[in-house]
Structures are given as C-alpha cells and as structure tokens.
Length: 280
Image (cartoon, rainbow, N blue to C red; front, side):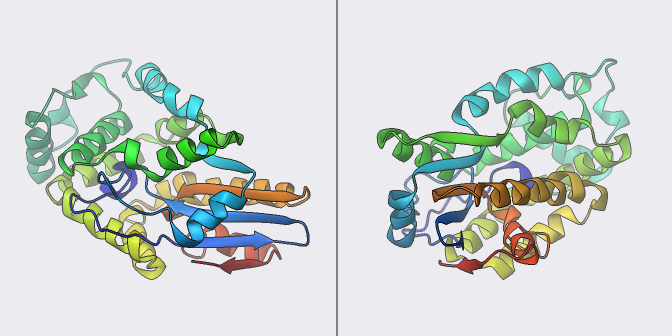
C-alpha cells in the first residue's frame, strides 16, 4: 500500500507547493488544519504565503507524533515486528506479488521477511520504495514545522505514540494484514509513479484527486480503513472540539489523507457543528 506507507513523494520536486489548509475557529480560538507529506524531495518549497502566516500566528504545533515519539518509532518497530514463529515469504505471496517483493528486496538489504509479521514487511517495503523515490524525511512537512516551532520556542505535542500508531497495523486481523501485504507487493513496481502522482495532487491542493487516490488505495482492503483513517479521525475530531474550549491559535498538521472525503477531519468537524473554512 505505497500511498499510505511511503509518506508520499516524487523524485521531481515542484518549485512551489500550495498544500490544502483549513481553519476551524470560534470567537477566541483558531486551529489550522494542514495536510502533510511525511517525506518529500529535497528542496520542496511548501511553507510560504498563507502557510507561513499560519505558522507565525500559531502558538503551538500539534502533530500525529511528537518529535520524541517519532524518534522512538524505530525502537518500537523492532519490538513489535518479529513473528513468534517464522513463516517463509513463499507461503504468503505468489505470482506477481512474490516477484515484485523479491525484486524490491534485492535492491537493498534483505528484509528478513520470514521473521516478521505481514504488516511489518509492508512497512519495510514502503520505506524501500521511498528510498527509490529519493524522498527525504528531513524535507517532509513535519520536520520543517518542527524546526520552525523549535526555533521560535513554541511547544510541540503529538496526539499519538509511536507504539499506538504501529499497533494500528499489528492488531489488524491476519486476513487483513495478508491482503495489505499482497496489495503492497503487487503494486511495488508502480510505487514511485503512484507517490509522484499523489504528491503532485498534494502540491496543487487538489483534494478531489487526493481523495480519489487515497480511496483507491485504502478501499481495496475495506477492513483497514476504519482502523487506519476513520477511527483516528474521530479521536482527532474530539481533540479539536475539546481544544476549542481554550483560547489561542494552533497549527495542527496531519497526513493529507486524513483531511479529505466524508470521513476526513474537516467534514467530521462540520458535521459536529464547528465552523470550518478552507483557507488554502
């Protein structure tokens, strides 16, 4: 599932990007909702204009993971990823999926997939595809925001922990994990092109195109959508509603896929009676 796992990017950086951003506000509280790409080509320019103004106005930054939790993700992955009993990759994949898996694995270090859960192999495949797409997490939106808010001495928090984020995948039932792994492997040869298209849509602020691509990716395995997108959006919607009770201005930055569609965060907040306006 490359669109979910690679953080989304393209080897051909656009000189300017204008990602979609919304504003939730009442009389004394303003919360900007910025759709992010976790990794981008080096030099991608996304933080000027209205985004720069929102960053300057915000007194705090809220992301999916705080910087400390993001740094802990590798350790948590090592704890959760291993299988209790090894299972050969040939017993999990066949045909095109197995061939693509082997080709991707041969392009770098071994995944040691026989020793890992299905969801963990999928994560490693996504990371390898991101490397091939020449993406840089240090050029991703979250990294850029972190640098700016730290330099300004403004607080940065997260809504999830690295462990809870990874457990979203680990706790999926076995058939769903296998379906996700199979789809990721079958599409591995097109992953760079797919994330390139997604990033171009993100850079244009084209939420209709983003929604179409996200839906095609996620809805291929319907059982995963609730855990990965809808349920998390509900929790984040509750966080926004609670935060609206306190005055101030907040920059809330989450993956772009969480802000589009009928179960996207802006739509949920509007349904709950909050004023939500797209400002970029």
